[in-house]
Length: 168
Image (cartoon, rainbow, N blue to C red):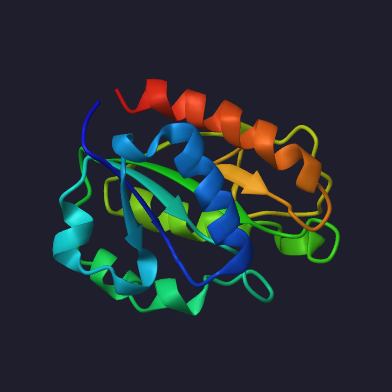
């Protein structure tokens, strides 16, 4: 497998817990673990495969720790690199922008030539709208710890198994 890293904020509660589950299933020896709050261009560009954790804040915004790095991504060529994005959202509390952070980050990555992998089914979710939608799929792993915490483990396991094939 090519060089793979997971990027997420170490200081977020729910995203960190899901990240730890992803790392456990993926295997600590199979990926580098980096704090999104401390990422720079050099550390970001040295990978072939990326697992990116992005929560959705407020009414469909990226968390501010990603806002700090997004301008740098705007200047990058991500051609030849694969990205799998996961995020947390609340489909009942914020049904009009469920997991928009995943979609916002996916749009950015695609606009810079990166290839998205890790698409998942919309089945089992109930929301009004999401920027993470791509046709009949979601462009990453969307987790709802508020309303569906019992589904997280199975969703993570299935998604990581999928990524291990797509990252080859």
